[in-house]
Length: 444
Ligand code: EPZ
Image (cartoon, rainbow, N blue to C red):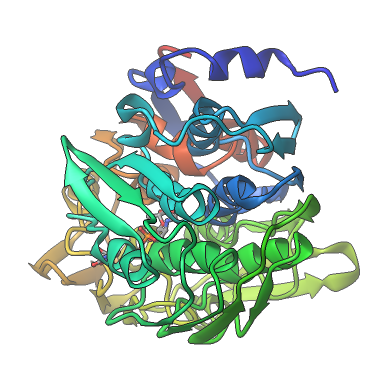
């Protein structure tokens, strides 16, 4: 396997984000999205699955891994632990046979929340770990207390030192136990279940996250020999084994990317086909799309779906909540759609305490949104959007600004596009394919 040029970048001390920090997207008003694009692998499934390679005595071979900034950074971080990585297009091979370091560098790990996921696997396989405390981000404090509490319940001794989470396992091997999460946490569920695969005895995780990305992680771990049942429900049970072996796995499609382009299609009165999806890619979000005015036609034999606008956009109140309810990662794009609907709609954000950072930027473009509290916003439709220079504040807020730019009179400019590159593969190429006049200006 010939590693492509890309691999050289991952050995550089500077994560690729530094190449993107000053770039801008220039977007002209669209007459509607038309055409077809491929949906890439799920970022939020790929990140924990890449990290799960730490657990395997052998090679984890992955397909459909999305080419994203966050993926590059997590692979950089795994290579720091001396995991051997080979990449060819969207296929990765990770060999953790000779891990020789149990410490993640501050430079990388502090930029990527998912870096905390190495804690459980390192403690489970090697009994020691040192991981920078992931900083907060624009969404809020992003604590990791539930990660630490669950691993401590399994026998790890964890303390903070110089901005690092330091863990060790005095008894050599983690011990399975019952873990009840007071609130649903995707990351804490992933950390605990990965650790439990190699713990001694039985672990029961109660109030577990039920996201499809959790199920995909468990599918992959079972292929490597893990004994897990109940994934996709709120109770996951794991019987620890001595070791995990090599495995092959294909990452599920990115349901958030698919939903983001579906919303953009409704907003611009278009009609597109999304390829490389699965019949249940949207989960219950399909109902929201149809209530808002979308006509969805699935072609299961082709793993594709047609999203067609039916002209009117209906205003729908939404409340974000853990899967299978309305995804928090779709809240910002949905808010733009509600600006284009006739009437008022309420958007409740119950997962994060600061996930309305896109509102001031949308307001610059003419949106009529009133933030009633950290957790509630009132949208008055129909807003007349006009072009402006705006700033992406996180990856989903960045895509919301793209949708606003597609319906705004004139040519808009979105800065800080590295946020968008964290979660959306080739947004310029995909939107160009759908008929949009979009260019990227700046560092790369
Ligand atoms: C995952 O983040 C996703 N990221 C997020 O997607 C997503 O928004 C989030 O789950 C919720 O669905 C990845 O999978 C890489 P949580 P995660 O732990 O695991 C609180 C995107 O746009 N909490 O489920 O970090 C936390 O503050 C990103 O792709 C604690 O209090 O989210 C939040 O309020 C953004 N203590 C709530 O739980 C903890 O120890 C849910 O967070 C952990 C979390």
